[in-house]
Image 1 (spheres, rainbow over the protein chains, first blue to last red):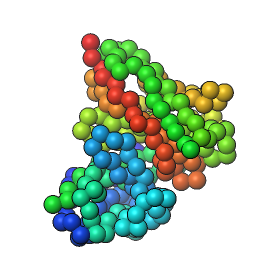
Image 2 (tube, rainbow over the protein chains, first blue to last red):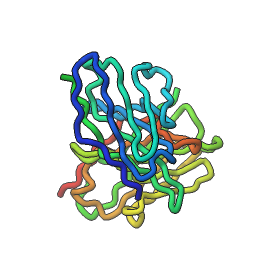
Image 3 (cartoon, rainbow over the protein chains, first blue to last red):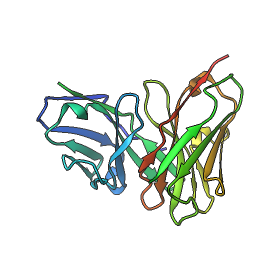
Image 4 (cartoon, each protein chain N blue to C red):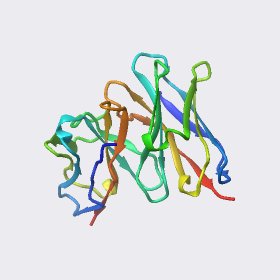
Length: 109
Length: 120
């Protein structure tokens, strides 16, 4: 299966920019989605198709994807952004498979 | 309004078979491109995809668990059922069902999750 690598943790002060990387072999050729999961809750889709935001997700959330790294960027970080973040891809070649990254805990200092 | 809800036993014994049901509303699983998947999360660990069923009744499974998993649907009841055989303590966790679409396989809607504990 396709391996997605995320750092276990990222810390940022309120008002600053958080960047959460997701590494994978030629991930830039794949479609990446990002989820936010707060403690005790189900995940929420915050970015899909590399850089699109679902309805209701603040513009502070954005994504990029190139080469071997996809990145979730959160501008003007707020205390309420503290959560675990997961990247995800779907592969159809050679076999259909869906992978999540190991997750990154975002701590707002 | 799209909703999904997982139901099933909170506890199963080792070697038993787990059966979970996802009851959904607000969409039809026979609509073009529609899919429902199961994702689990062991306590304190990452999300792990298990299985997916699509609008054409095609089924996809996590390679490492393929021999233990089965996914099916009842379109008349708006239900998707997951069975997992030979349960072990390592299978303890929260099991989610989620809706996605064949266009991009992003999980737009999730159930609240069902905690399953494997213990004798």
